[in-house]
Image (cartoon, rainbow, N blue to C red; front, side, top):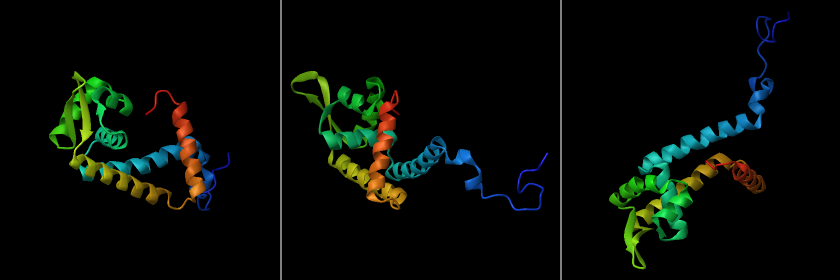
Length: 161
């Protein structure tokens, strides 16, 4: 049996990146890219003392304006019952304002406070910085193609992450 190149034959091992095909598969590359993004994203959230769900709540309300609790939970993809403690924490932190809907007193409407608006602006800027750091070497057409391809991949998945 012939030994693998670089193993016991006196030659140096082949270049790992070129030699290992699995490291060039789409799933492996997506996992690696995901780890890069997740590390930076988790660091950003830790610096801002926010959770990933608060990230979604703040940016959703920043984009849509005031929403009912149930609709907000639907848009960010969490069970409305699980949203209550997250919303409570966000209200206590001064990020959200919760008011009774004058048209339906059983309904609660949420909107960003001034502190929540500032936090959303920081989140958007930090997210843009992360994207620029990771994708800065790509030309605009490649960035657009990557975003479109990833969007199609996620749209085809059930359920979405």
